[in-house]
Amino acid sequence: MTNGNGRTGLALIPRATAKQTLKDFKSDQEVRWCPGCGDYAILAAVQSFLPELGLKRENIVFVSGIGCSSRFPYYLNTYGFHSIHGRAPAIATGLAASRPDLSVWVITGDGDALSIGGNHLIHALRRNVNLNILLFNNRIYGLTKGQYSPTSEVGKITKSTPMGSLDKPFNPISLALGAEAGFVARTIDSDRKHLQSVLREATAHRGTSLVEIYQNCNIFNDGAFDALKDPELRDDITLRLEHGQPIVSASKAVRRAASGGIEVVDRAGLAEEEILVHDARNPDPSVAFALSRLDEPAFDHVPIGVFRAVERPAYDTLMARQLDEAIAERGPGQLSDLLTGGDTWRVG
Image (tube, rainbow, N blue to C red; front, side, top):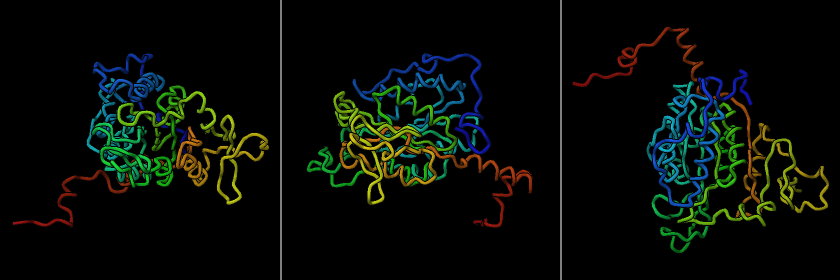
């Protein structure tokens, strides 16, 4: 996937001169998550995927906020920044906009990204900054010991909602699509092959990519995604999203509804031409948004894969173009001119 200049999302970044392996991307830090946490599987998938990029490790940066997932940068032998609560997208924006030679990643969780960090997330998405956001969604606050989060379901019993949550949860995919994100996908911690395939597509995309990863917290919200992992259920409820392919599970299919929306129906006896074919590159996000709502209110059928992959100019490219034009017209700027410009006041 390329942008209008024919360059992929990684084309500006220096390449490694020697072949790299998983071992090259493991740091010397002891991994410290609760035994059985889904973060281990995601870390292993990312560590084994990074050599594929063929980039110098010093040109890869992982920026995290606060939360269990935000320990991620410690465990990767790349540059990293463990930043402040909810502000990882803002810090990553500055880095990506000023350093096009870097592959910039944001590691965040459902609490970090969608509560205190909600504004930073949506503005990074709408600006289309060239970075990859991995949002670990375990539907709970794990680091602070089990309070309900912005993605917890209505009625969720937790330490902070002993009679059940009253809040309507965010749907991260719907939120990203509403912010006009160019690349939006969902995967799951236990499916390494699918997770890595989504990462492959995300890194090929120039602009912001958001990948929601269903991640099990076995201490405070164990089994939240069991239906997607149960061998007897998963093939029936998982709707695989593949561009140009019919949207189906083992027993169900998606089709246009009489109301004008979409609906999930039994696949048996359904004519092939009635089944909706997935178009991830459709500039109109309305169908992708409708697909993002199919897992509401419960996991009766869950779309997994790339919802949207649409190219539009990246923020850092547009910013660099403006700077080049300004320099060409007026020459290099001077900091002193800015500090002593017309809008200044002398005090005392």
